[in-house]
Image (cartoon, rainbow, N blue to C red; front, side, top):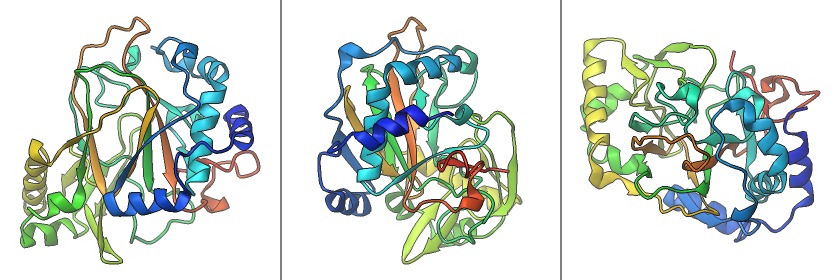
Length: 304
């Protein structure tokens, strides 16, 4: 069963998170992201950076202590790690590095194209929307752990509130109307889209977003104009925070309260390329009805 080894390791590994769970939650809610370090990280034990998705099983076995520690940190932080049906072949941990078969895609495993500001898995329900009892929700959090870095390649964050401070009231109103179409990201095996949804949802005095620069479209010209204005604003580099990740360092951020981006680069495919590990998290355990196979795995979510 996929993930069994690393989840077993996660159950045995303790005291991974370098702060209390309450401090972690406070920082996350206040700043929308938390920078932290993984104490179990040992760079000399890493395999080469993978270049094919099929290497994932081998790497998961070889680096199982590292993978288990990363999952353990999520449990300590009160987060439930998840993977989505149709992406990453069921593996909870995704290798964010250039893959040969994805070189022409705008995705976490691409490289030669800029990956503009976006929310991950925006076609799924976001906070404030009616919960689907069949499909899993959009991730609440996203964690990136750096294994290998390249100085010229950066992951950057934009806080949603800072962007919306610059959005006109009329555009904000339109962006909160169900007049948009959202395409499933290129990282999924099969394409899909959802129509008649808003980009923004206001819930409990906070704004949440499913904005994706590459995969959201307005259903009519008025909606598309408001979306174009938002696209243009998100490319204002003064709003970007370049996340300073060195090997062994991680960032966890609120997926629907921020946007993230990565600049283009030229992969070498020689085992030394930039390499991060990605984990999606939910703030609450998913419903059994949202799980693909609840009798086998409590972390694999339905998307169809």
